Length: 557
Image (cartoon, rainbow, N blue to C red; front, side, top):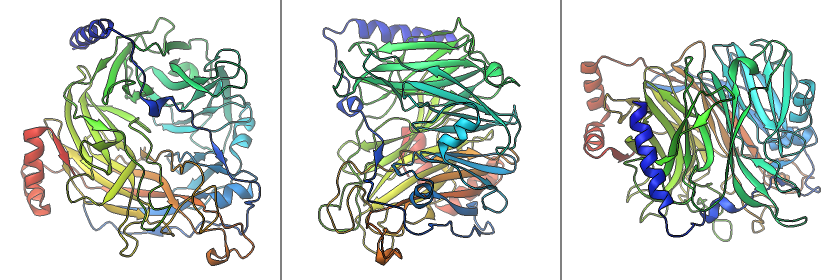
């Protein structure tokens, strides 16, 4: 199977080398996105305490089992930090849920949803582990095989990255950190931006988008990418991460080579020394895929990349709508077509989610791709949203997949619908089963996880004023699987809290918008036998959708 991938990759490389002229990377990838800090006058007012956990009894094939509010712009400002966006990131462990975002580190008792210890700043967390203060962009996972936590983020200098592991399954216990240079730049400052994280067999993969100015005082420009490959056993060493086997594969921006943007390693269980990487193409409206052999060893090598075969064309998404009139009606940043969070390889299939816009449409959709891992061939693509009757924008999609091929997708949705809270930017989820041919069969409709508290969200300016700057949201949501029950999926995402003004309960507040994060545990039903599943599909009214997917390999959900 590997030879098929290598042949296809070689053909793709040959075709690329025959290009008459160098290409320009897509403009949405070349703009450096600074972390936005609210003006100093937007001080913390009010305690912004988390609401009490809510618990439900599952009454449908997929339903919310428990949920609670996580950290918010209020709670991080109480720690002296105000950052937009939060870079919403968390993971579930055996007894805890850990949220690591820009500005704060929080550990919750997953049985109650209550904080297990006082919330601390993200820099406090890293420094306690032996690292440095951090510039953010965090990622965190719980590794069930090691029974320990793994975290990645910027160092105090954004050219550096930090890796930390816990000593036990208790996230409140001892952590150990190590730092390495992600990107050196050109001597005028550099950023190893948007670090991604994956655990694949014997290796840990961290991808970065590299930015640096051409000279002192110039703006940052996109310079290419780096894939950092670490040995998993060494990272989880008892004394702390050992990085001597670090292998860095740098791909400078040359207008020809296409190893992609926001390169995302694919999570894979087991002891394989071959890893897979997916990324958004630098030049085409498609995805690229390649493999790393001898991953986790200094001799690790990367195959030539290839465009995934069989994908459906798309455009970059436009901003999201809100049910308000005027300048702030369509300002929510839906991101771009990168894979925002994790990709998974289950039973030889790679699953990942992106935000795109269908050709001829004006609404963002979350696209779930299922791909043959060995060949890069698309088995199916399912859009959440889309279609002629759609009135909403869907973005910031994330997913997780269990060993049975059950998929839960978390995402945000907004629109100009003014009925109730329908148009507010809110957190949703959907679930699917994987058919034998790699197509997806829906096992739920849209599940509202958390509605925003206001119709209009914007930052950088007070309530009633036009928005200032790009209205960042997310920048991602995250779904992880409970290590004690793989039919429990934990989702974290963003919603808009009340304004920091008198109407929001803060009489002396500045009037600025505030974000919040929300965590939900979703339960999925046991995968039924084929005959039972056919009856269930009919009962939920998905027969036509499933048939259309099997014919085309593509569907809107």
